Image (cartoon, rainbow, N blue to C red; front, side):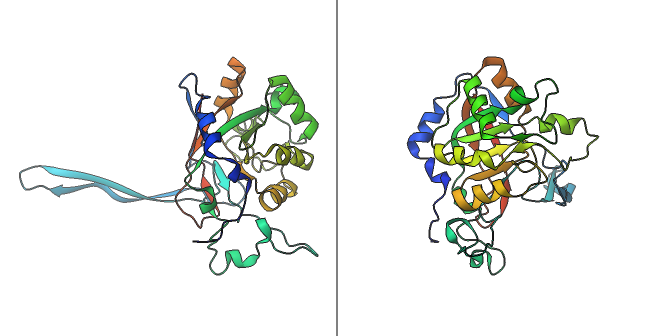
Length: 287
């Protein structure tokens, strides 16, 4: 078994999971996933589906026929609503040992791009914990319903959102940053915007101090785009905070606004591909 590299996901302990299950009050299940065959960010290819069997008939010998259908799907693990793993992003810097989380070097992904410690296997069986939605749109752009391209969400903005909502952050939480990107995308003639508002590096001490396990957003990169990678490097390399991008948050944000409850049970079960650099989110919020 590969040596474990500590990350903020370790903060999701059994007692944290048990507490999160008590947040289910209505039995309301909300999908957090965009369609897998929808547009993907940057140059990642769209999902490709190939029919393997199409209404193939196999006789049963008594006048009946079994009708069989089967297909093959090829997809980008970081297309649509997805998780970044800790092997997704590293940094080479003067005077700095290592490249990835925990000082792990490039040998982690050599040979053949099969990271034994920092790939999808670091997510274990899945992410089950308390989720907290932070409605940055309500604070900054309530009149238009989404952040503008030039918006940079600071630590002060996040703290004001939390104050208005009456929300607190706890160790092991997954924070959901609602920017209205999905609403903006829906008005863009099916073209994925390449520029988007989001959080900036000033927020990073807040997440680290609170012991947040992951940051999830509905925009392209969690941080504002085009990304300068400050948030990616701080989260994935320095603090071990997982990142989720392009999650579907419109329905969840509406539900939170309607009853004023911004916490919920998050259940996300990524693909069982321990060496992958990313995975579809396969996530729901349960309220």
